Amino acid sequence: MEKIRVALMIFSKSMGGAEAVVLKIIALIDHDQFDVFLITNDEIMDFFIPYLKKDHIYSIGRIFLLSNNTFINKVIYKLCIWGNINIQKLLIDRKLIKLVKYIQRNNFIIIHSNLELDMYMLSKAKKYLRNQEKIIFTMHSSLSLADKDIPFCTLKKNILVDALKVYDYYTSACHYFVKLLKSHLAIQNKYEIIENGIDFNFINALLQKPMQNKKEIVQMIFLGGERFLKGPDILLKALNILVNQFQIRSIHLNILRDLSNNSLVFKLAREFNIEQFISYVGYVPFPKHLEYIHYSDIFILPSRTEGIANSLMEAIGMEKPIVATDVGGTGEIVIDGQNGLLSTTDPIQLATKLKHLITNKDLRTSLSQNNKEIKLRFDWNTIIRKYEKMYLKGKNNGF
Image (cartoon, rainbow, N blue to C red; front, top):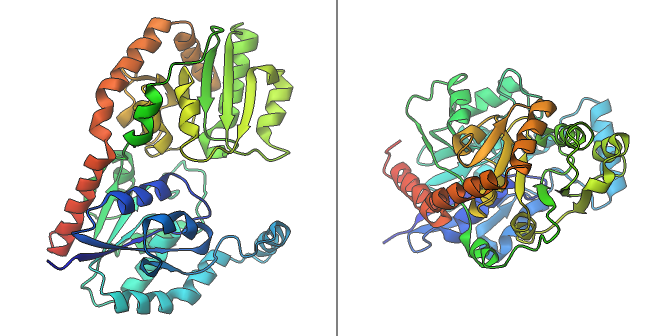
């Protein structure tokens, strides 16, 4: 039987949630049935090399960090702002015809895009293709399409919407993103929900290890570093209320990911005099961060905007009680009072929810048990079968 040729496409500065999903598809798809290729950029290409043959990876080159020198990259960034130059769009437009020729040479049946810039580039390439290729876009973020979104996309909204219009099919891990798409596009029934998965290979081994908290201090974990959209300032303000207003002192917060020297996280911690309640762990490579989740009592996701965060799925897999802001698709996975507690982005309400969970060990146990019961439905091996079914549908013109 001839294999179905599928190209996964993702352009990014570093590894994150969407990149991890692409990696899982590559690693777990049925390679006897699908011949999988990757179209990416130099900055993240090396992460995928262990999972694909080199002749199955095509890079368009550097588009984010144009030099190995950090200082030069900063100069380029400032010059682009000063000159109002969208360097990523400029580079992608210049590399378009080479990409088109690569696609044509390889006779792909399915091309599956995942992030803003690769979505844009593939939409431009579509005009040159023979229509035998079905193009799919998975919406991993809101793309700043929501009315109250904080703009974070490289491309303007009208360019993004025009690019989205040419796709044959759409997927998302949550209904929230589908609703956003429907508010801008007439996508009819050309979409489906495919949840993010949980990798039990690492998790199950960790769950056999005993907890190490012997001091009755409630350990909390936040994986967002200083990323504004993840709400670190909301969390620090809530921690201030917990310590200085609610007088809760038997707590400790671990913050993962690197922080810049002038990070707002440091400034707020000093201002609120709560530094002794925080550990700045820094960057922790996968899967080491799962150990930090395992040895925590509460997982916190105080985001301003969110789809279905991979870290949220990991927390469910690790059977942790969750406190999260009710934004984006989070409320589709975290049911308030069942497997976690939901808050607004108001630090006072977040602090109140945290206080309720910190002071109620029985509630923590109950939420944890409920996550244990629901997590099996998110096994990556089950999720990947949904992607395979979608690719087959596209091959058979079922979109």
